[in-house]
Length: 171
Image (cartoon, rainbow, N blue to C red):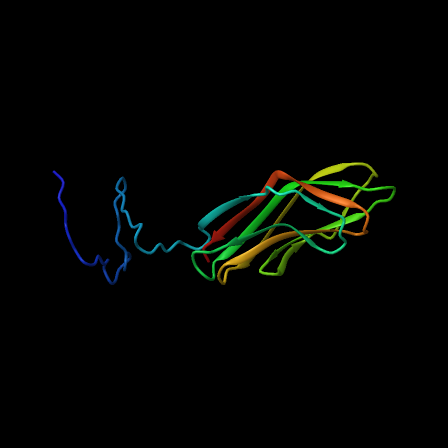
């Protein structure tokens, strides 16, 4: 026989080892979907995947955006961790250009590779993967940018070969 109890507030004991806690026994659940969720430090609060669907094709020696997303954390002060991964292709003539990639959150560089040197003069593919993090202060713009050391050389990412993962981690 099921019963129902109606109360305005539930409170745990004010002192003791379980102070201010309401304990739900093993095997039972409590639906608090309309209430506040307070995660422990280092717990994942949310995760989002943003597929890269556009083709990036550039010969620019200045940083150019490969992918940019907006991410809204559930709570200011949590850590945003972003990871981008995709296949990078390069074509060049008769010398060995370097390429530079970086990850920026709200315009602040959180990761940069020093350079990627090409060791031949033909097509080259490699998996470009970067990870960086920053404390959240509100909706953040997360961007992966790329450049080539010398104009006239070409790098590109195919449209559907990867994307960006973003986690919000409780602090």
